[in-house]
Image 1 (cartoon, rainbow, N blue to C red):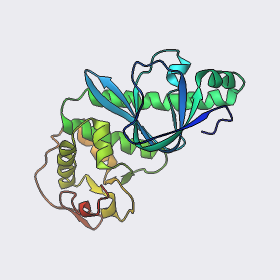
Image 2: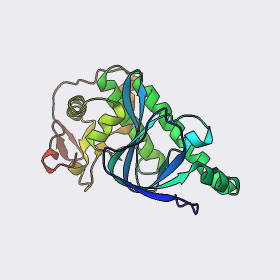
Image 3: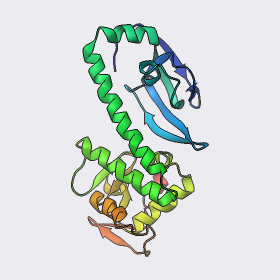
Length: 242
């Protein structure tokens, strides 16, 4: 987002808290480089709702609804942000109907994302949370036109998937390895994709897997998918892609 409105530039290292849930909202931020996690405390536990990158904005909700911050923003990777004070933003928006339309569209997408996250948090078991997170990530890619029937590439690392599902690293590893044993997921590099992430072998099968309420833990076996042998999803671990 490139707004021709008065702003300042701030640089923050990883781990910096830009604002906290409950703070007064006096500015919005546009990311120039790096990334920021949006976290929310639910039932005394903090959950990652989204990870935002270059060109994305955050902090606008507290300005638009004149309420305290609904979430906490923490720098994930060293970030440079444009800081737009509330008064400057509101004055500019009053004269720019097109900007309002664009922001409403973005807010609607974020509301949809928040609804999915709320649904995921209703599940107590880590395997259910992870599988629902994978399903949602696959749906996002299909919506963007990046996938369809059959295999879907999900550009998320295991750490990012764990954060989305609010599970520990060990729990995420356990679930992904068991899904790989059932032939439902492989690392992206095993599918000759030179990028971080995973490929869901059959997105529809993964979703049906949940609707049937089958247990995630399958009988250990090796399955050949598209000519590749999958055994625990460990083929690419040594190269650090996931």
